[in-house]
Amino acid sequence: MNKTKKLVASISTLLTRRTSHPSSTLRCNPLATFRIKPQTHLNPVKPLALLRFSGRAFCSGSCDKISSSTCWNCGFSSDKSAFLFCDSCRSIQPVDDSVDYFQIFGLEKKYELDAGSVEGKYKDWQKKLHPDLVHNKSQKERDYAAEQSAKVTEACRTLTKRLSRAMYIMKVNGKNINEEETVTDPTLLMEMMELREAIAEADDSKELNKIQSQVQEKLKQWSDSFAKAFESQRFDEAVKCIRRMTFYEKACEEIVKKL
Image 1 (cartoon, helix red, strand yellow):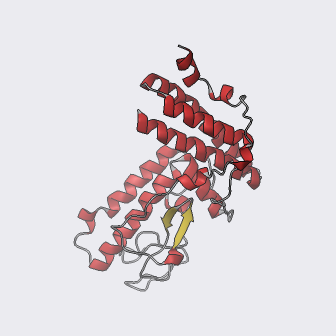
Image 2 (cartoon, rainbow, N blue to C red):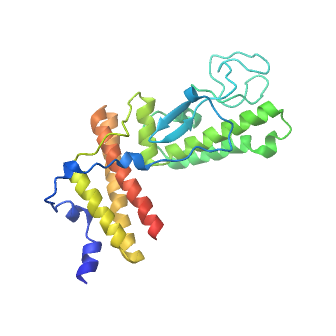
């Protein structure tokens, strides 16, 4: 009974515990845990066409670089960038570096957004890019459609998740996050060790679900804190929020693996 109570202890209780070992000697980099292999089925892109966020590659360019305002097919020029089709001949255009993920879905560049509206627009774009609809196009347009589809998919995944959206909007605003920086915050280090121990020792789904609920609440709290910090342009504080969110996101993944 005492062991069970220990395993499901609330995170807030865990934070009050202290250790005699200097936590500053423990090097831990939660941001480095998010490593996602780039998709291999897509056409390779130029190095300068990649934006990296905590180990993830965001495709924002095309191998076949063409002016964003001039159609490769008919030469039609426009003051606005053509994200998907030429306004004149309706031929599929190559991926445009200048179009960010928020523009794809017609959203303001702000952290808080409606995930449902993103998913709805995503489905609309993918219908237009479906292979069955472009099979009679030239090989060039089919390749462009595949690149556009990949970018739309990555944009949707990025903007519908709190952590990736926070990191992306910081990048869009020119604020780099040093993912290699060592965590030295004693409170965070203590919480990381205690929570990981609780997850590792939990031996049934009831305990794991209770821990998961606590972790998700913490993730939401730090997400809200990031929104406030970013809105008021307190970027140093926003980075601290991202580090906390990264830790809780990783904890959620570890719990899901055990459930």
